[in-house]
Length: 200
Image (cartoon, rainbow, N blue to C red; front, side, top):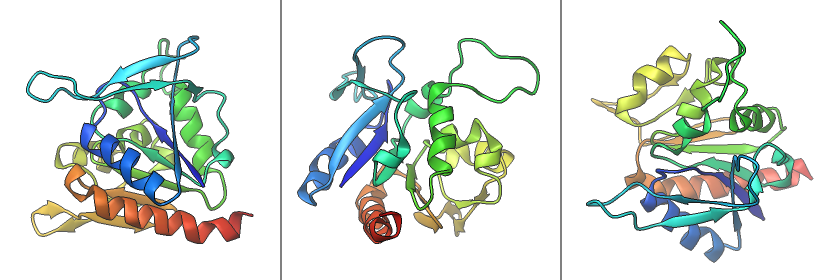
């Protein structure tokens, strides 16, 4: 199986390392996608740790032309990458929908039958670019984007005075924070494995 991971500058290095280690150990290929701005490849760096950017990834797959159906599942990596991927160089006007290539890809992914999409920490920001994709969905996320998610119509689940660690709502798997990455990956893999027979 192959999964697609959307990524841009300022991605979470903890998740990145975990994805690159654990998924291949389970026989799952990881392919990174991004908007390449007309380039054949672009290299992105992770969030800095004590001033040092420890992780880099070179992406050659353009999200604007990628087909979500080519993947067993799609993950939106955490930290600030998804905020960058919803950037539009131009806006059509008041009330116009976001036409960033990654947002258009997410629309196609959500419309793909039985395709599991995983989000973690801040990555629901990409969903917030089009509230129609998030409205009424049960999710969890980082504490500092709860207002964004709820304003976009998402139903955030809580555990006491924290957001829930992990929430599964149909084909959407969301996790609160990089510290639950292992549980997130195991749940995501179980979802895409069970969906393979349905999609083929």
